[in-house]
Length: 88
Image (cartoon, rainbow, N blue to C red; front, side, top):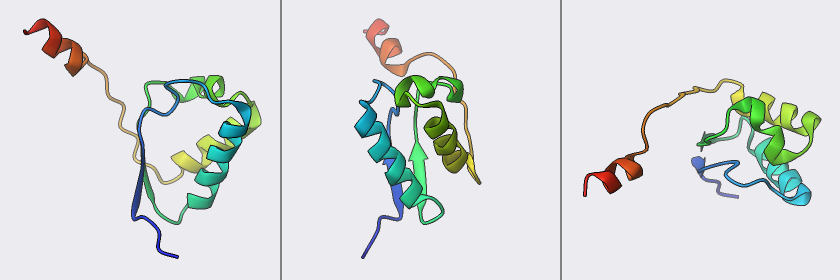
């Protein structure tokens, strides 16, 4: 099986997942763990991911996997989209 070198998950947690979808995403991350690179973007702090996945134990296990050996780059600032809107 040929896998992707990098998997990109954009805006994780923008909307909460149904329980089954959260479980499937957890399984995907677990399968991908230490087998390939991932880039994950999210507007939510890690402490709020349980709101997305609805299960504290699963969320803790997920965060354990995605943060292990990770480079976490917190970014704060103005929205570039909003900035473009006002500059017109």
